[in-house]
Amino acid sequence: MAREKLMEFLQVLIRNKGKTIGTLMGFIIAILVLTIGFFKTLFIVLCTWLGYYIGKKLDNQENIREIIERILPPSKE
Image (tube, rainbow, N blue to C red; front, side, top):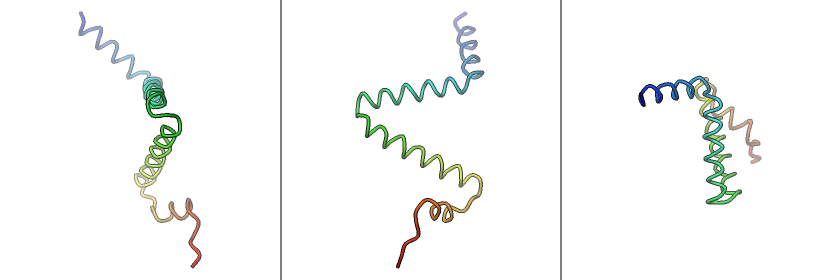
């Protein structure tokens, strides 16, 4: 009986992946804000987003040098 209920619960979570992931992310961010503060949490979120962005570009076989040059201005020597 408990196994059936657990399987049913997991199927609901899988069907609603976006809601499940969003809820977990919100919960984790709330805990971080309460424990380490807003700005430290914001820094963690920004670093995580940047890592995701660069990883996504690498997965799409894009040139990392071009990506960095678009983000950072060229140096003047």
